[in-house]
Image (cartoon, rainbow, N blue to C red; front, top):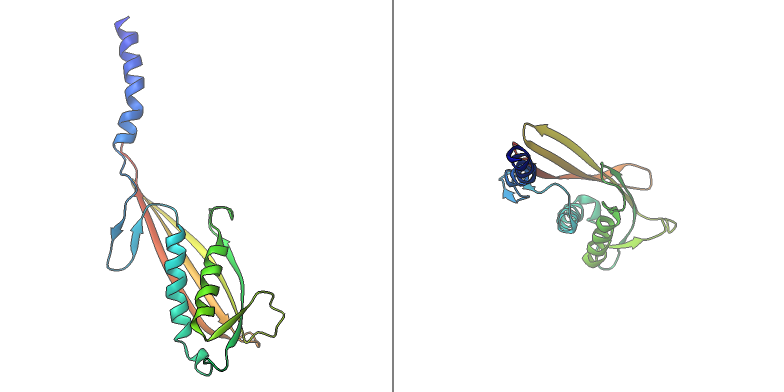
Amino acid sequence: MKTKLCLVTFALLCPLLWTGCATAPHVVESPNEKIRSMDPDTDDFATVGNVMVQSMLQSPSFEKYNANKRAILYVGHIVNDTHIPMGKLDTELLTKKIRIALNQSGKTFTDMTGQNNPDFRLNGKVIETYIPHGDTRQRTYSFQLSLMNPQGLAVWEDEKAITLQKTRGTF
C-alpha cells in the first residue's frame, strides 16, 4: 500500500517538477536584437512595418515625389515561409500597417488592385530560422521587403529580423 501511495504521489508531482523548472517566456533586450517569447505578435508587425516604411521613404526612389505628386504604390503579397499557419501569422497585419504609414506619409497612394499603372510594387517574405541549442530554443523571423519599378528593377530592399527565444526545463 505504501508503495502504491508513493507511486501515485510521485506521478502527481512529476508535472509540477517538469513545469516548475522551465523559464517563463520573457523579454531580454540585447544591443543587437530583440529576444522574447517564441511567436511574433501584432507589436512585432507594427515595429517592423514602421521601421521598414521609414527606410523606404528615405530612399532616393521617393525623392521626386512630394505633396504635389504622390507615387502610386501597389502593396503585393507577403509570403509566409514559416512554420506558423497563415491564420496565426497574418501577413495582412504587416501589409495594412505598411499601407497606412505610406498613405499618411503624403508621398504615396496605395493601389489595392495593382491595375492603376503603379509607379512601384512592394512584395515580401517572412522567413523563419529555427536553432535548438541544449535547452534553449530560438526562432528568428526575417521580414524581407522589395520595392520594384515597372521594369521589375529593385529600387529599394530591406530586411529586419526579430529573434524569439525560450528555455525549456531540465527535468
